Length: 304
Image (tube, rainbow, N blue to C red):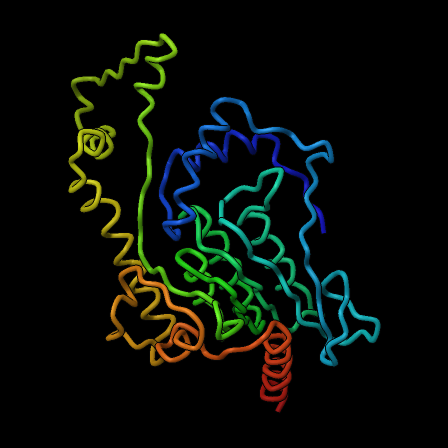
């Protein structure tokens, strides 16, 4: 399945990076400054293949037969759509990655198909921008409202990616070796370019109206080393919202007494099941089978 890249993707992507609000593993966040600097300097290159990017969406019937597109099968039976959510999550796509709005559109399309009985999100992501969460959340909730079974299968599902996984009816961790879940926390990165511009011979001025003393004050304070206001007004409320979301989504399963479970720690393997971040260890095939079986059970209950 292909999508046409949004014409002004570069500007949208740059603004998203500059905004700097991330639910993301720290090791991934460390690479954002160099990526942003490359864009600002114009070093990012347009690939010769053109702007179309293929999204590897597939479907499987109840016998496990694979199809290259979703919503159809040779036997005209209903199918389980498998939709990937991989890499750092951003709201808009780039030449090399697809964005949350692209994936949300596919989820919604699958939710509207009578031939699709279930949706499996195949997740391998350390999280990303907070702006990537709403479109995906809305599409998953819509799919559930349409009676679709939703299953998350994760190799890595951290931060914003775990927010999305926890919306699903059931969560698989891929393996006991290195499947990594958690990192339930909030961070922000932003960059001061004053010295950079000065090195280019550009004198930097930032002037506010007398009536605009609070405009950008959180960031101005942070630039001066005072981080308390931005934590109190921006980061802490979002962190509490994230915690409450996970508590609600994993009610009766989450072991909140686990050290660090709601404060940013990550966990691997079967520990994710033990502490309630996942329901079961299993492969993508296991997730597809469960989605199919739950769909059959739901249809039986609804029809009798």
